[in-house]
Length: 239
Image (cartoon, rainbow, N blue to C red; front, side):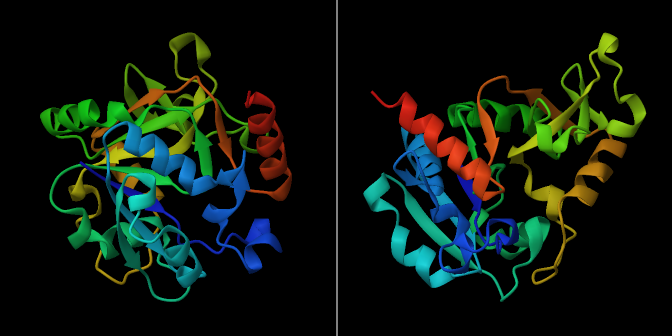
């Protein structure tokens, strides 16, 4: 099973740090964000990695190479300048990802979710003919409205059930982790710039989007302050 790590973004909110360093290479707990992902994936036996890149692509490729040092094999998907957004990035990497369900991870999050679950989720995805399975987390302080609702393993539009906690449909935030069928982005042309959200909303309308709630640690490393907080937390946890 292959994994796509999104690493092409400019990281505007992280400037000036990202003026010279790709956001996935920013260090927390003594190693780059993306290396945390690579090590977790290798430990789970998921060693076929596709990484998309655009901003400071040469720096990112030089730092990680073919991935052998981290126990994985990396295929690079270099996008045009400015990048193609998330759905566009998947379409650009279509040939490298193949025809089977694949794991997707945002390169700018830190999470203790176990990627070994991806194999089981891929099988379930195929059996149900779903288009994607998303990992959701409790809403962080910087995103209190959330993204979706989750009820009995199915994802719904937040506007339908927002705040209906008694029915288990309180809003949750997309963790930037999921297992996707290639069919989700089948209609996106290679080179087209497009975000994932419209495709996920369409999958909800067709009742073909499943999900789960992760209650462990998750951080959207979107600002220098959150980067520094996570770095302190991880260093304090190191024996």
